[in-house]
Amino acid sequence: MGRWAPQIKKKKKVSSLKKKLRRKHEKEAKKDLQEKVGLFNKLGEECLVCQKDFDKKNKEMVTSWSVIVHEDKVRLYCPACWDRANKLIEEIKDGYTNTEDDV
Image 1 (cartoon, rainbow, N blue to C red):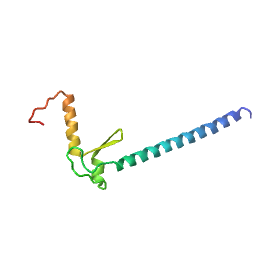
Image 2 (cartoon, rainbow, N blue to C red):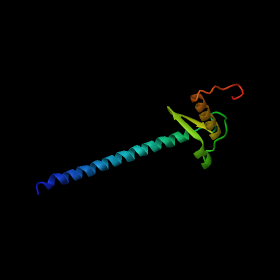
Image 3 (cartoon, one colour):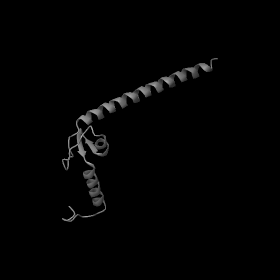
Image 4 (cartoon, rainbow, N blue to C red):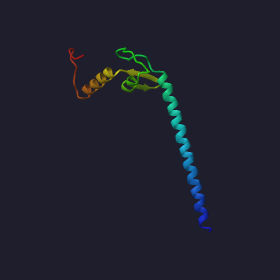
């Protein structure tokens, strides 16, 4: 019987560690969600580039527009402007130089 006692204690320690880790992850997830909800309230009402109106209550807009958060600054881009910016970045990476006609 003496041999089984350490194993029982070990199981208790493992289960308590699992509970502690689970609680820690839940707490971190809750904090992360609160931060994201807070940032959602900081969203602008229009695209940063073209000033197209953004409706927070429109599910399609919420899922299709791009949001960039950098140092508590929230920037909002419509899909057209976001695609244009990504295309420009790719062209720059590929060594493409814009002419006045392309801009």
